[in-house]
Amino acid sequence: MTNGSPEGPPPPWPDIHRTVLSTLDALASSTGWIPTAATVGIEPIFERVLKQICEPQGVTPSAYIDVLTRDATLRGEVQKRLATLMENPALVSMRREAQRREAEHQLHILHYLLSGQKPPDWVWTSLEEEQQQQLRDAAESGEEKDPVLLPRVQGALKKLATAPTTYGQCEDCGTPILLERLQLVPWAECCAACQRKREGVPDEPPEPQVPILYF
Image (cartoon, rainbow, N blue to C red):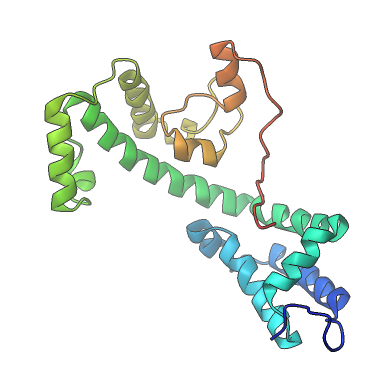
């Protein structure tokens, strides 16, 4: 297995690249990969594609990534196809549903810390005894109480309980809040741009809709 060193004949990078693009195009026309991507993300799928294509050619996936890193045109072609996969409506829907379930779990725990009200049984029993005791101690101490954050957490839980499809929609502009933002701030009422407007903070360039982090 080579990393694309100058020893011996050069790897057939054009053929490898065309095969990668055609494989990603084929994925975009299929659905079998979507449940996996919804669970673990697109990265493992992309890595498996590279492994299946590169290894029979005697090169490593990392060597191909190095080629993409040096060539903006080739890199752009791959990123465009990865973005198409990430924007698949079925995948987006499954990722948002999974994020809603995780957010509800996180918000109930946070609500317990902020208010002292024990979370539902399905949340509590999902925790190990040591975690339960740590949360119990923190809630009883009152150190986590925050009168500003509590109503925001309660508002997010109310959405999830009464109108779950509205959770994750910006209250000001109506666009979906990026999943990456909701994972960090599950009580967010607005997208980052509208939140900055609420706070009177100068606006910044728009957030990337499909962040691609491979190279």
